[in-house]
Amino acid sequence: MTWTELVMEAAPTKGDQPAVSDVRTGEVLSYSAFVRRVMRAAAGLRRHGLQYGDHVIVNVPLGATLPVAVHSVAWAGGIAVLDATGEARMMITQRGYDPAAVKVEQVFSFQPVPGARPFGDLVLNGVVEFGPLAGPALTLDRLRLFDHDELSGDLRRLAARLVIGKDDVVISAVSEPFRGLRVVDLAMMSGAHVVVAHEPSLVGCRVLAQERRATMVVAPYDLARRLLGDPILRVVDERAIVSSLGL
Image (tube, rainbow, N blue to C red; front, side, top):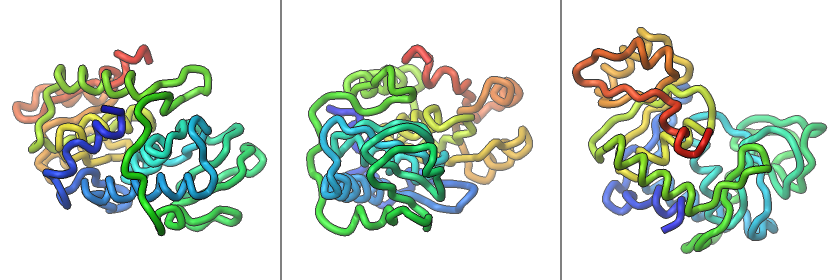
């Protein structure tokens, strides 16, 4: 089972239940919508010329659109580059980019941007029902490539260690996109619901946990340390999400 297949695994039973909620934008991504958008966007990327092994810059902040963008690239057979600059076949952005900082053939944006196509154009026709069997899927620096086997194997080990269940509500208060993506991947493969908070304060995190009836929070060390002691809320230092990958 590839990385994206593992993240999609709970979708048939979770259906329209929420997978990712973005506190900043109010957007809620359901399990079924995630699978549908990934399969359709992967078809759109291929339709616009993406080939196996092509790099796609993904400059999208933490939230409900990040996992859709990254896993669409991986499902299409491309390699997602979590960066805002450099050279690649294509780029996916949230709301803007610097044309002088990138060398790409096409840009797709979730929000209107001059010179970019709407991301919605990718999901108009067709689906990719089966992603790649193996191969590289993601890079942070273009030097080290994470393949499907490494990413999925690491998720399984994390799941066994952290024991996230299908009824858990996980607050993601992490500090950067890759860690946020790993939290989403881990929760979705378990059927949990991720609530993405954006640089919350200690009080803000506690209020959000109470409002959302959260059972777990993943946060930077200083915030995680101050959240310890809650009898209901399990607290995880964000470094634990990526340490097994050597990051």
